[in-house]
Image 1 (tube, rainbow, N blue to C red):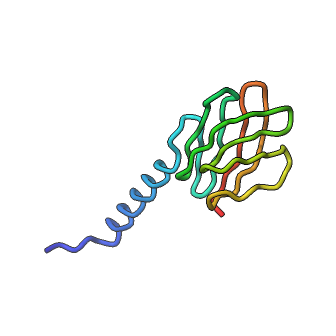
Image 2 (cartoon, rainbow, N blue to C red):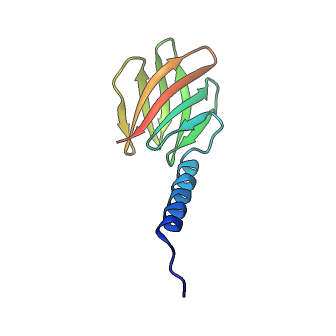
Length: 108
């Protein structure tokens, strides 16, 4: 029986990590690194995005404050506010435009 070489083991490990990262971001409007995502959500009813195993749904927004449901919890985020912890993630509001909101999300 053949034993895998260290190089083959490293390649397989890297491939598994790459697939795990891709699975962490399931929306076109999500860009993820190893433990952090940049998320854009449309400012419209029923808009949502999935990232790092959770879903965020847009609820409402004004000029500086956005209300979302993240992993089943309702959050109100203000631009410039420190990140808020929810479901093992740190979520902060990056931007608010007339069309979209931008979030920064990272694992805790």
